[in-house]
Length: 238
Image 1 (cartoon, rainbow, N blue to C red):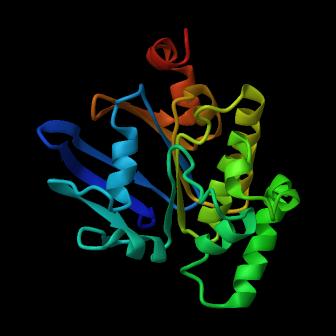
Image 2: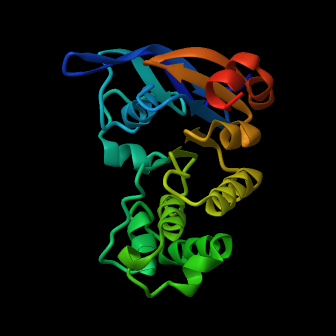
């Protein structure tokens, strides 16, 4: 099998005296959607923040495209092709939709590429095109989530990490966001998805890892985990 895009090997992460991540290992291969599911506080977001360089493991390693990220600063990790859409969206609320997308392209040097990429984002998210001159703070929650995803795509990531993309959204918007994630995957994106909505996440995932209190307790294909009685009972309401 080819070298994984992302390889997390036996990382331990502490918040002060709290042992938040306890020796987890997993990998993401090119063209996969891999999801981390688990209850609130299981350590899913902490794992993403460690991969993107915002937190540092006390032991273990994170490798992206075969290279250790141990000494790499977060903005340099983005330049290498790893983009994270943070929990809670965090768009630049005073800037327009268009300006937010341009900010996402700070790693790009060619203006022609940036314009092409903005057009691509608008074709994926027609709603954003209609609101391109609107300030991001006035958008609905679903539109802000689309903008946060579009902004991340502007850096042409080789791995897109999504942290709780459906959080706080109405059910109809949750379906839309997951359709968009599935569509991105069809177009060749490799995605690491952290999501509390286990049913939706597993239904589009190639593989999944179930986290509990900082450990990975179960792994399998999306379909295997959807069918597992333990997973159904714990995360899928039956």
